[in-house]
Figure 1 (cartoon, helix red, strand yellow):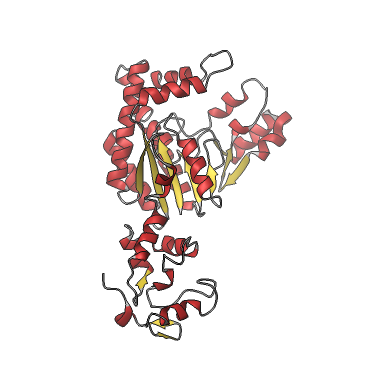
Figure 2 (cartoon, helix red, strand yellow):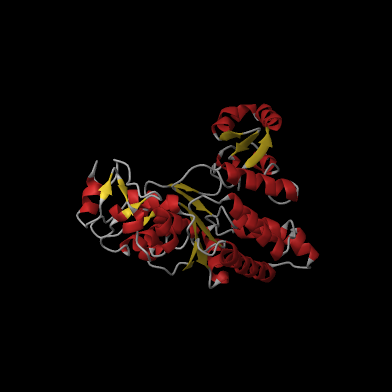
Length: 359
């Protein structure tokens, strides 16, 4: 399973990621600026030749650059904001190689995103603002794309993600202005000079979207954030209807974090399998709300937190075959549990025509 934590700036995504990481310590958390398999925020994306030019230009910190560089196909990704240096203009120079703010064409932008998502092959990840924030912001402000065009692109993203196990946790900002005010204070220097807000406001004011629509200033930017949130929630409803949960920003209990996550729904589905019957992985996935996440069912049951109340031994594959020897307490354990309920097991299989749950 993988989690995408989304929401507006100031909605509390970092705190949510921290709590989710504490709940699932075996998961890896990715933040903006990290080398991530699905997001390129605050990273330079260059050809091999340009990368070599950068190393030559900044030979004095070559070792630092290579330590934060990663090769993907014919491209290099540099996590340049994680490189500490007092060389004037270094970060501004590398910023030009980001894929956002119209630095690449719309077609190239889409191909890079879709290509990286297609190549993503890891599980047990927690991604902070990696699915919506930077992509939607860029498509609105710099590509001046319509809502319909943005939704259409997310339908392409969903196709690429088919077969992946993921869930979106969206933090709903009910008071956008207050949330932004908190960030303004948090991201100021020791003398109280704001660092983030003037940059964000300039970013908005200078965007093609703002200029084309005669927009400028704090109120117009807040209106943009409101529109962006409404659009992202619409994308959740229309494109990812079974793969998202909305949490009220900074107004949820820790238990709420897993109250509607896929694993929780899988466990609840397994609890419904009647005594003396079995269900297949795909059946459990369908009952849990997404018939395509059969693989997630296997992963969740392998980590069953409450075997006494979650009868995962009643789950078999599409042929009626039992799980491998690693599961359910060792070789033969699943068969013994099933047979104790009157379910016949022959050569490691259950006759689904007799014992499958007809729900």
